Structure formats: structure tokens, C-alpha cells
Amino acid sequence: MSGTLPIRKGDTVVVLSGKERGKRGKVISVDRKHMRAMVEKLNFRTRHLKPGHPTAPQGGRIERESPITLSNLMLVCPKCNEPTRPSYQRLESGTRIRVCRSPKCKEHID
Image (cartoon, rainbow, N blue to C red; front, side, top):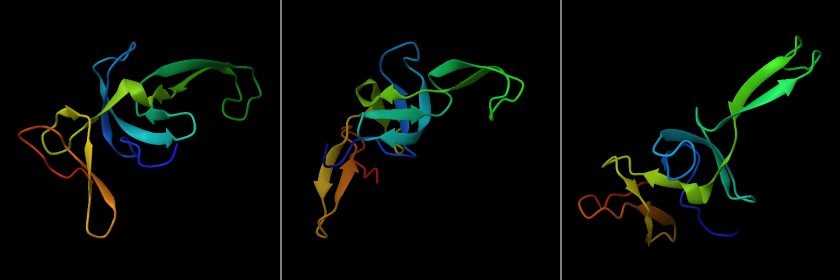
């Protein structure tokens, strides 16, 4: 997919569906190819490791974040602190910036 994604690394997002619905977190990374994002401290999965594994030499279970589909996330405007689906404005320089769609806010997100 070419173009701009509504969610980028470092953004605060709210989860719209799934077991983590309603929770907020910071985006750690975005996988453009698979349209997924890793959100800090959300969507944990347990991985069982045998003894001798490099990350856990004694073996056992480790928990870590797993990706969430971008369609299940919504950007939170840093100014008004409300979930928003951003609109885009093109500046004179030709760059596109995200803009909050809230009727009260209308602030630049980038």
C-alpha cells in the first residue's frame, strides 16, 4: 500500500474491537505490508520455550506483545485527547499532514 497510513510509530491509539477493546496505548512499530501495529502493553501472547533458548536459557513461558490490525485501532488526538479518524491537509511545501476531525479541535496532529 502506498501513501500515508493514519497511524504511525509513537502515536497514542485506542483499540476498537477484540479483548483489549477500549484500552489506550502507544504504538511501538507499524508493519505496512501486513497492515498491523504493535501497541505497548496490549495484546499479550504467551510463548512456551524449551530450556536452552537464547532469550530464556532455563526455558519456561514468556509473554510479549503481538500485532493488532490497523482497522481495529483509532488514533487519539494529542490536543483534545479524543479518538479521531484524521483528515489530511497538503501544505505549500507539498507534504501531507494529519488533522483532527473533531469539530472543536481541528488541530494538526503532526
